[in-house]
Image 1 (cartoon, rainbow, N blue to C red):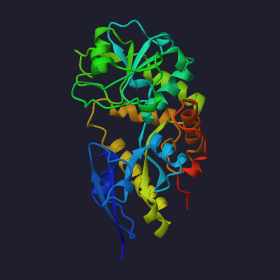
Image 2 (image 1 turned 180 degrees about the vertical axis):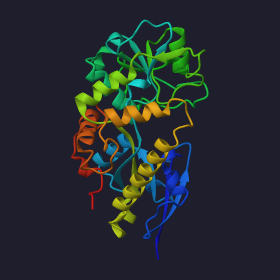
Image 3 (image 1 turned 90 degrees about the vertical axis):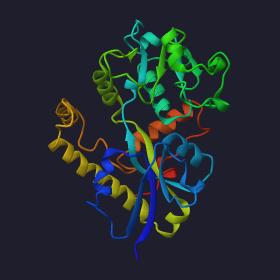
Image 4 (image 1 turned 135 degrees about the horizontal axis):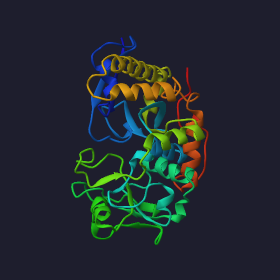
Length: 317
């Protein structure tokens, strides 16, 4: 009898082959559920066996000695972060170096994406202590929450006064830039109030890849340790399913690229400038990326010590 497995993740397009039943593992009866907001770790929920999780929080959890969830080195959310650094259209900054000495808003200090974005700043030669950081909600529609927690440093990392949304402060000129994990409404239209700081995002991101050799992983997968203990083959099986689904979907997107006027150009750029395995799963294939994230999290004060990636993620079969 196959193992019934309930997995919760965002509704990424690449899981379409799985949802359509185009591939499967005879050992698994997969119940794949899409959510708008990630639930956190599967160990905190009855009825969930695995989930898409923050790499940052997974690393912190494992470093802190909590082994109730096992990481799976499959990265449903993976992208360069230079594009997430935005400013108002009238701001003069055209480089990350131009933000040195400035004020930057961030919605969550510990977030994986923001950790990687700060790494991009450091890679460009901007020290984190050369920025005055402000923490707050992105828009008025977002709930007021404590995104700063234990990481507050008065005069360096401060909460926003009166819970004013970061994008409002950016538009008013009180901030020089904001790290936006998702672009604000209207950003892609001609009447947008904001723009990326960098005029050549692809050039900057290719330079980053040339220096570091990877595309940052932002979210990974996690399984309850209890189910992995009983089924030690499961992490690899889940990783294989997701990787195969992504490969099938990528092939279809390349064939049917007419859903967007310039998707064809995107396929050309990725295929000709990145290696075939840039989005591969597995600890071994992602050893440099994971080691860099763990070291970066330590240097940014998110974790008290470094550990090898194998301490966080299940070994490969």
